Amino acid sequence: MDVPWLRPYAAWLAWLDTAPRDARTAQRLERLRQRPGAASSVPTFVPHERLPPGEAYEAFIHRTGQVPTRDNAHDAFNGLVWWRFPATKARLNRLQAAEIARLGIGGRRGPVRDALTVFDENGALLHAPPALWAALRSRDWRTLFVTQRAWWREAALVLFGHALLEQLQQPHKALTAHVLCVPMPAPPPDPEPNAHGDGAGPHPWDAVLAATLDGWSAEAWAAKPFTPLPVLGVPGWWPDNAHASFYDDTRVFRPARTPKPSEAGGAGALATL
Image 1 (tube, rainbow, N blue to C red):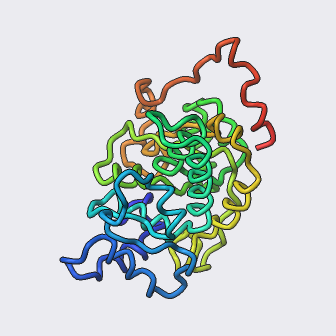
Image 2: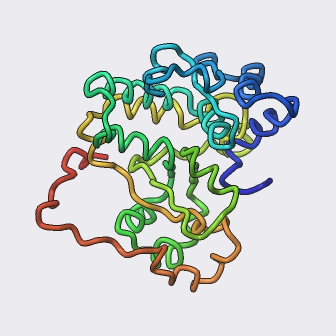
Image 3: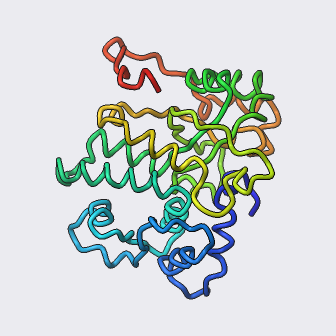
């Protein structure tokens, strides 16, 4: 299926589809290890029943270098993101494991693990001109998608969250990514094999992103450094958004919330992002 959100994973999906029909998802993901350019640092994918009862999923990955994998689309997309963003996924896993070791497993994840999970499940990465970033951060949807629409020719959006990729198997207008507030570098120019992130090996943004996140504190994550983006509003991502009226739906394209006085200045740790 040639849709914009799958293009960074298209070559890997095609390789996955060569597996025997009766192969389990972990086996299919392991086949990608044979693909030219595949990163050797990606952990091993194993059937989900290898996860011992009572052990946290992220702690198990960190301890064993194995990813428990169920036979469903959600975990298949998770594996694909591991292959495309191995350094970033490993960094997120280390942070999750450190929080689990520090706080244990309770009824709630806590603010740091919650933010890490939001990005892992629903995150997105964006390269865009400053005018688009400014409109996105202020949730000025009209400027972002209508007035400044031509600037999207200079932009590139890559979905990182595997749950979001799964949900987009049945697209609907309300699907919203959490864009990490770290502008990505420009993609390599055509005809570079990775020009759209769909060639062999890790995605061109993986090393840059992982290095950036290495410098982040727990407090920076706890502040949830994301901004929402209804992905089917991106020009070229959905036919209906060619009409400006598409963006009049305030149930999806919600205006920015006015912060409470107690929240003012709460994101100081992210001021330099």
